[in-house]
Length: 378
Ligand code: CAA
Image (cartoon, rainbow, N blue to C red; front, side, top):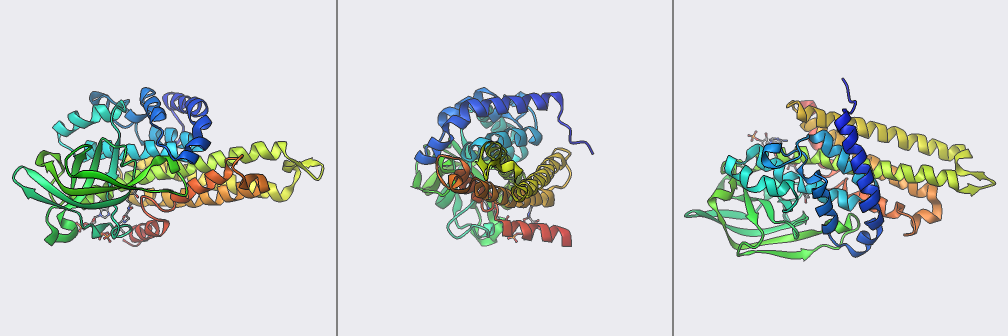
């Protein structure tokens, strides 16, 4: 087993580190305050080839794999969870098209996804279909060479900015989850509108919205995969996307530890720097050990995925563990910063708020325990 980065991967990491320091870190606090989607940063990420990671060069992408995705997303998350989330979630749509789309769909959507000219989103969740993803009520009934889409999706990250959204809807409501299908809905299609824009606790600039479909006519050629294959497509997409959330959580935790190390060296109490206090050093040891574990599990899940081996359990474990780690580490990091950590002058309180969502979205920690236990007990 070898988790060493190749020279090319080391270069990507260095590029992502420099990019984050130069373009992401200076904006993080302001984006958190305004909740504005970082469009300019997104365009810059595209120019650096980040949006094309995982998309083959023949479709205009930068190549690379889930390892490179984890490298870039975790580097961004060290300084800004929201910016990392925008990229990580944008990456779900091209992965769905690559795995399940037709050649025409790949040629149509992937080049623009890769160079970032277009932004994408993933719409599964509904007011009554959260953890119970099979309870989707949105319908897409066939009418000649179109589907007529009716329903409401909620908590859709980046949905308001997206040019293309993969939407899960029942093409045959009598069949329950076996009647669920995946369709691409384009911005501006009549009957498609943006509803409530959520005011969130963390990752505030990733823009989370409601999507409303009111007799929205979607061309039949926008069906992804076969009718009725939607639930499997959604679950497969989420398996991959959960590695992305693990990367976000890992990066937030790494960033919080970096801030803590810096602070402990500078901050003097009782006539000594905080690094001279053994009780706090034990906290550092706990944080660093949990981060190391999260790092290995995240790269392990990505490696299995690349090799084409089953990875549902490992992705769920990586996401569950990394998100719990992110909360643990940001909480202790804030504690070590004391009163300063609680103030907005320091990034710790933002990091802790950003970390919280990683335990919730793309499957809660509790759902991940269900997935892990099912796989173990198989
Ligand atoms: N890969 C492929 N197929 C899978 C699968 C997987 N990982 N998991 C399940 N399936 C298949 C099963 O094999 C089964 O197929 P068959 O009937 O042919 O055997 C079918 O799907 C139904 O599976 P289950 O019986 O396991 O389904 P379930 O109703 O018990 O649900 C669940 C399983 C794991 C709890 C699922 O509902 C789940 O993952 N829930 C969480 C949903 C979630 O993560 N939502 C987040 C959405 S995105 C988001 O948060 C934000 C954003 O903006 C992106």
